[in-house]
Image (tube, rainbow, N blue to C red; front, side):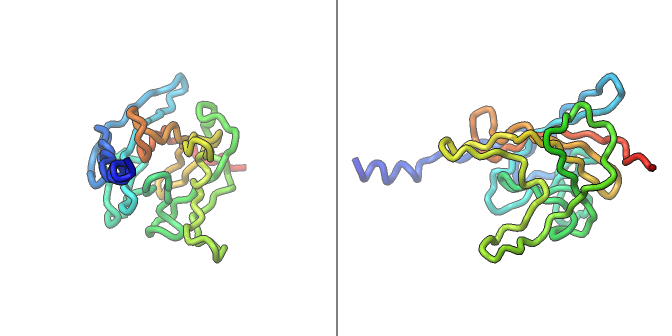
Length: 192
């Protein structure tokens, strides 16, 4: 019995990529789009970010997967980690504001301040950088399940402002590393 249990770990099936972009794919992927009564567009997508080593580079403006070298991506995804192209990764100036408890649907204008960049972790004990989008989930230590926290982000890209909210981390089959999120361009901050 112990021999059988020892072998079972090596028989774990590989995650099955979903149709909305497997790790390593680039270019257009399936994006759902909706327009509200005020004309604001909301897009949603699920991205396969199951690889433990490779990043998936995503462009919010075009809704496409790119490569690290093309310098048009706004965020990079790997498992549950989301990095912005600015600060410590990439050459852009992408930053984000964290709006805890905000309503995605009611957010139509970007805040004027509160934007942060990903940065190096100054705590010597931790190796992982501090990602602005790093607080997107609540972790259940009993079930080891990640659920989206009540947070909406405003991401300032090189071109525009986007409201952004994580919806899920699991595929329909329950496989982790399938980040589902919604986003949409909103109005820039109002001038005083």
